[in-house]
Image (cartoon, rainbow, N blue to C red; front, side, top):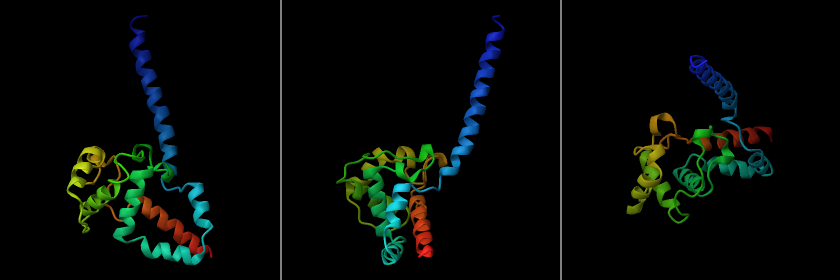
Length: 165
């Protein structure tokens, strides 16, 4: 009986790994979905509103505001992969725009950030996104990517809504 226990443990781990692989494979389909509440919100807007949003979406200012919003509110509503969801409040609401400005410089954009912004980024963000913003081992979103994934998802939704009108 003693000799069977290690085999049972190995089989248990193997079945658990297969179970996780199966469900992770199927849950990855939700990466590019948009929350129903956001889709309903956007659907209530008129074509001029959608056109106006699309005219700003590729600007550095829009990207900085998006990053600030993610810092302040988290990214749960975007339905990213489980390891890519960020909780809100890693820095204060007052410091979020400073960090967003610093993050934009990692992507090569110009932004005059406050001195403490790089320290705030290093102590609150770099653990997952890396000092260069490219994401640690590809596990977390690349903050130097343009457009950012969430903005790309918004743009696709807005373009889809515009084409329906």
